[in-house]
Length: 239
Image (cartoon, rainbow, N blue to C red):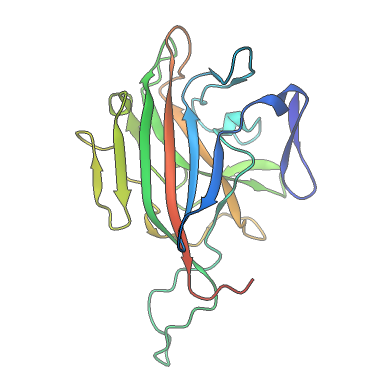
């Protein structure tokens, strides 16, 4: 069992790893909006009787081990990245000129389907939900920058992941939810240019969630979240 990164820079699973459930997907909504959705299992989770388990979220990020150690929740669906610095003003001729598409995150939703329970693993929450790419030079996973690990959602405590809780963040920073919402993600609104020292800059990245304070393991440990990110492109689309 395991995985390897092919010459296209894509991680391929082989052996029994291929049977582990993939939790994410992307679809086109009516109009120009696209939606990325994924389940995030906090602890080890089996989908179906006798099915292989999706592993618990890691306590801290590791880019030199497995996708699970990098907190990656889906290897089949990439979230797009901003290819150029976002356009914020007209040029010297007074023209607002779009020479590349602009990525804008319009809304992020988080639903708690099964409450967070540390079990015997001592996890106190999540450091955040963000993005991970592959550095082709080192064949290692790397957290996308800026705002590593918190592009979609910032720090979340176990208390904020109670059963049935729902949170919504809009592009202007407005937050709705049960009691005090978790920290908002850093990429709401126009997404910034990727700043990783990778050539060429990656065009897409995997969604990643990282536990803090321990892991969700042992008796009653775990929990299940659903993340939904609504985004759109605007401006000139060359391809």
